[in-house]
Every structure is written in C-alpha cells, then in structure tokens.
Length: 537
Image: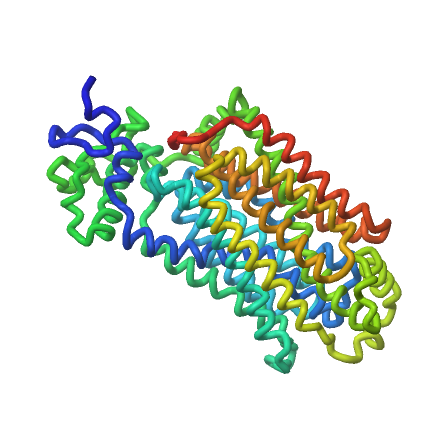
C-alpha cells in the first residue's frame, strides 16, 4: 500500500489534496486567532439579538406599558423572525456562499438593532425585534458552519467548545453592560420627538458587535470547503494559500499544495473564474457561461436539497430537529425569563421584612403574577422610576460566569467521555434540574440551580450541533443547521409564550414543561449515531 495515501502532506509528485489534507497543511496560528476574534464579535452579535429583551423587561415595563403576556411576546419576537427566515438563509448560504451571508447579514442586523433602540412604544420595538431576528438568523446559523469549515479535523471539536464558551461569555457581557447603563440618569430627547431612556442606550451599545463583525469578515476568505463543493477549486486554492501565508508568515507561493481534488467533476467554470497551474500563475478562462435564469437556479436548488428527503438523511434531520426543539424550549425559556425572575425575587424579598428564607419560588411567582395582573393605570403605578435591585445584575453575572466555567471543563470532558455521552448525561441532568426549580426556597437556591441548569443545557446544545455538522454533507450543512436552529427557535418561541400562561395557571406547570422537554431530548439522544472521528463530507 502506498504510504502517502491518506497522508496530510502531498508529495512532490503533485498528488491532488483533498480538503482535510489541504486545511491541515495551512497550520494553526495567526489567521485562526484573527478568525477567533472576529468570530467572538459575531457570536456576541447573534447572542445579543436574542437576549437583550430579557434585560429590559423589568426596566422598560412602565415606558412600554407591558403586561406579563406582553413580556412573553417581546421575548419571542426575535425568534418569530428567525423562524420565518430559516430556510431562505440556509439556501442562500449553500448557494452564494458563507462569507456574503455573514457580512451583509451582520451589517443589516446592526441597522435593525439601532432602529430598535429608537423605539417609542411596545409595538414599534416588537416590529424591529422581529426584523432583527429575520436578518440575524442567517449569519447566526452560518457562523458555526463557517468556523467549522475553516479548521482541520484536529482542531474542529475544540472549535465547537470555544464557540459555546464565547456564547457564555456573551451572556456574561450582557449583565455587565446593563449594570453599567441602567442605573444612569441619561434620559433625554432627540429631534424634539424621540425620548431616549437608559434601556435604549443599552440597545444601541449592543449593535457594536454586529458592526465590528460585519466589517471584520470583509478581510477573511470564503470557506474553501464551500468553494470545493461548488467546483471552484481555483478560488479554494487561493483561500488555502491566504490562510497558510498568514499562519506561516510567508508568501502564498510557498503553500505545498498545487492542486485540489475535484469534488464536483465536469463543472463549467463561473464567469471570469481564474484557474491556477502548478506554477500558480493565474489564467483567464477562454469561455464564459451563460447566466442562469431564476427558474434554473430554483431547479438546481431543489435538486441540491433532494437528498434531505431520502434515507438516511431524512431520519437524521427529523431526529435533530426534534431534539433541537426540545432543548431550546427548555434552555431559552429559563434563560430569557431569568432576569425577570431575579428582579421579582429581589423585590419580593425586600418586602418580606427579613423573612425571605421562608419565601419559595412559588410564592414569588404568585406575587409577580398578581402584581402584573392588577395594573390598570400605568401612569399611576409607574409614577416613580423602577428601582431594580443590584441582585438582578449580580445574579445574572454569576449565572453567566458559571456557563463560561462549564465550557472550560466541557472541552476536557468531551475528550474523556465523547460528544454523544456528554449530550446524553447533560440533557438528563438539566431536565432534572429544570423540574427541581419548583422546590427552590429562596433567591440563593434559585441562583444555584439555574446556574447549573443553564451551564449543562448550553453545553448539550453545542454537542448536538457538532453531531448535526458531522452527519450532513457540505452542500446541505448550512441548510440543515438553519432548519435545526429554526426548530430550536420555534421551541424558544413556544416556551416563552407558554411560560407566562403556565405561571398564571399554577406554580409547578412551567417547571414541568421545562424539565419534561429536556428529559424527552435526553431520551432521543440515546439513538443518535456516533460521529466520533467522522470527517466532513
């Protein structure tokens, strides 16, 4: 057997390199650090879009005249926008490329966030949050695919954990920003019409990650895996060369790979496409391809996604979608309502005259529901600015810090027990913790249980996405991830709409919903395929 077969280093006989070989030869260095920095801002942008509303709920209640159900609508508005655009973005990412979707998506999202910061009423804010969700769903879903395809097999599993860690870091930044901005007396009027409050300044600041990531991605190349899957090997080779030159701090011509495996044979080159000889000299194609009509593009797109509706991909898809729905229903319901719960706990304990140790979460929820339901005149009930306890910020900082620590240990744990086992144990533990919130007796126990719950459930979500990425080919990966996230966001929307309804019905119902769906996802995870050491298709 030829010892060079399967090797990551093509020899001087100019043997064609496949994606894994070519990517591994680019090394790991400065480029990956730059990618991580831009990816951090991009991850924060996607996280901020879905999380900011949970922090303004107790602050903007009077300004926006919100009832308990209104708060559920506001929490779910972003997810409603995401659901409506999932398939569109997935198709675009698998046809026009990851990079364009990321750049345009984040820059347009920044505009939506800035517009939401100027909102003067509840309806206006809901509309802009819906639009923001519609836009950010594209780059938010494509980002993970892009980061995965820009790393070789040796570093890919750790990239998923780093992504999850940055997501936790983003949730840690949120309460810090809120703590710095909300207590300030910064109310003023713009253009004699727009009344600006601290929570609106908070939203405006949260647009910065979208702006920075959108501009930063302009300097990064398109995913070479995507280019190879489209038969654009010349452009893929250029991308590999750019990564190699930045990592090795040398010229692009020093990159050892001169030719790539044709993943799409018999493809006619794009208009003005460059081809590269072994000597790496660009040559213009002598012919041009006629531009495709919309009908042709649609037919090609349908042909591309046809394998999703046949075995085994159909079964894998349904399995992944069901699990993502359940996980994010439980996870994001708690995550988005937690700031409101902490604000209610702090307010209740302040009124409890030192007897807070006897106040369980059920009593606190009953107090919060009754308080909201009796408000009929917001002008009278909101005559004073809301005085939110410092515990709101401190508790959320503790919860977010726990998530960062959990992802640090998850990187070690996933190597020890494997991604599938981590997913199974994580979901069963988080489901049990979700139900156990019912027996929480005070703010401290709620803080501890919710910290562990969100940390373990968040790690489980990253593990599931890693399995999804490994099961599907490049031509379908972004679409599948986008649809999986759509179902996850449908779960988040469902949970946030049902949570206030269940709160009004009784105490144990919302926690049974949260814990039950995660235990169901844990049961489904037992029959997932094992994707350890599986290379990208």
